[in-house]
Length: 192
Image 1: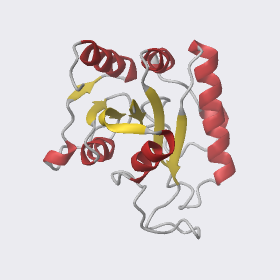
Image 2 (image 1 turned 90 degrees about the horizontal axis):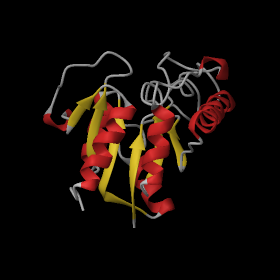
Image 3 (image 1 turned 180 degrees about the vertical axis):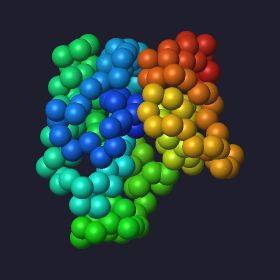
Image 4 (image 1 turned 60 degrees about the vertical axis):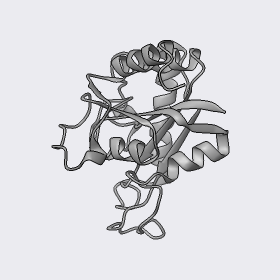
């Protein structure tokens, strides 16, 4: 089974702007496209997993979120010929106001539902895989699933560590540095 790098989207791949709802707001973070291309060239699946509670909160609709994602993918291709293997999102939030998205679910990070679904649908191995994100919930999600989790400081200001479940294997400035870290570990045979 193929190993993967699971990426948060906003703040990891593209600039964090809060509830992004317009494709015109999309700006890739420096080096993100090259990082994704390099990880795929190394044989890793690259899968974005994103909480999109703005849908449940009524801040934007599903169509707007998908248009933003299409622009992220267009910019990845244009900048470095990069592509994601897949994009999974959670539209739910327990305090949402839009039915049927106002609910507790297992896919909302730090839950691992999106990772498990991707592994099942794409024949991916969670063992030996990685999670990269700019929030503690990304780290907790990866750690819960048994992944090596990396925290990047390219997004929102970091919350203090609340528990050992939120401790990353490393904290790095951005996705480009995280990709170098991952590829170096693989070259050393770590995690095989």
